[in-house]
Image 1 (cartoon, one colour):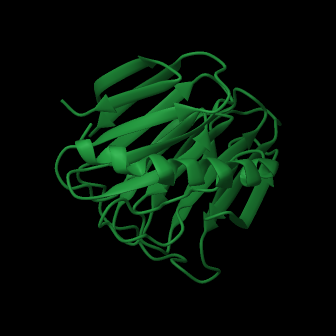
Image 2 (tube, helix red, strand yellow; image 1 turned 45 degrees about the horizontal axis):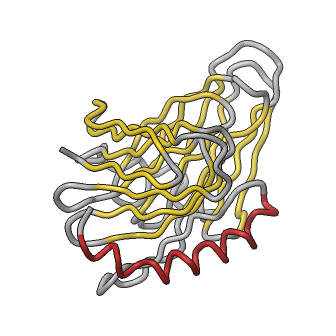
Length: 226
């Protein structure tokens, strides 16, 4: 973790305050604040996959630059760090039952679109703008495909910092959540700080489909690319 993280202590305190305000939405908005000389990005984007607990799903997420494929089970959040709008998710329920499958797209702290279905193998689409990207083909797969998967503890609220060699972003959410880092420069790392301490963090750093680092611990934990 690079030395300039120390600069962020005051900014992290501000993020904690913002997090307490956003908690009424059963989670946090995707908060992206530039660190050091890094300019602030537009509000982050967060997809929340809700409904019948344990329902498996697959999703294809794309912004203006990159496309990612994510698989998981309900409930789970997916946050795109350093995203470039417009953004879209096409998610499919991977079960034949009639359990509820719900999606929510948040830009910053504002819910911009929701969808839900109880149909077997339901497929739904959310996008940040009513008309974009529409049916436009998605861009190429993310390269590199960098994903921080905070697997637990379940419902743990946290703040943290995700960075590469040139830029850093403060994030805040709750587990389980996958952070997709769009167009990182060089190696990546993250630092997470628990707000509730429900148990130790369990975090995987996944690059191009392979787990390259794992970390367990708390209330503060760091993970970095080897």
